[in-house]
Length: 319
Image (tube, rainbow, N blue to C red; front, side):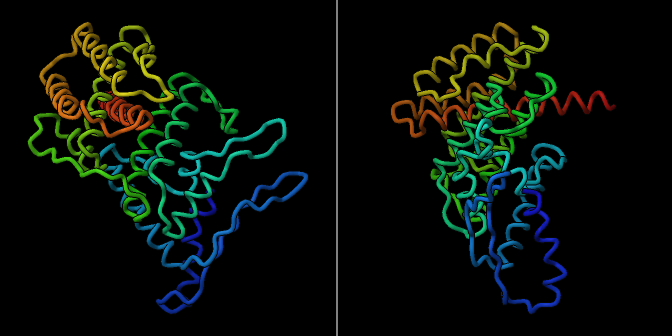
């Protein structure tokens, strides 16, 4: 909620009257209010004010990172309101009540208390929010429908990019561990902007490989959007419930064929494809990621590339 985001600012005046040490604590009550009742959902107790300071600093650091990697925007401020919309609770319209909220409250509690946050839970929730935007499941989460297909596509891109930044946010708060070693991209012969994003978000080699495949997916999708007048049939090649390694290998062949068809295989794209192929060949016998992760990291690459294309087009138009 936005009230949580502004809480740190509201405490500044109170903090000035206090000593530097944490000599008071905060309790956070989460509740759902309806006409019939006020239902308590969770109580997070004994949060020191210094924790809010840490959270605020991490929000600022991640915002700066987002501005550097993706262009300056308030979209990259991961306040509690934006985190809410990354993990929105499900809503029963007939009963007029929230029916699935524990995941969100668990995430809020981890942020406030420093308790470990399960990476598997977060990735599963990210795929659900992707399905929300892709399949128009807005009513299920009591969210307003977008005004146009372009607006829906934009909301999907922002959700995926924020999800990537949330991974950095959670790591900086010390509440989530992805596993795997961050890949060394220094010798990769690919675009510097792509390398910097992979490095700063902290992908390991296999996640990076999927990200590169997603980048290539974005090249095809953009070509189709231009050619077919605002349609991206290639996105229908993904299974948004999850994909195993064999299906990804088939998808990569289909994407390569489409890159040839749309004459997108310039040196920049060829280098990205070569690096992706190198990673896949290296790990194909023992692929460490599950079917949900596979789809999420492919779509991460797609979102990054598409956002860059939109951003460059907007800058060109402005000039």
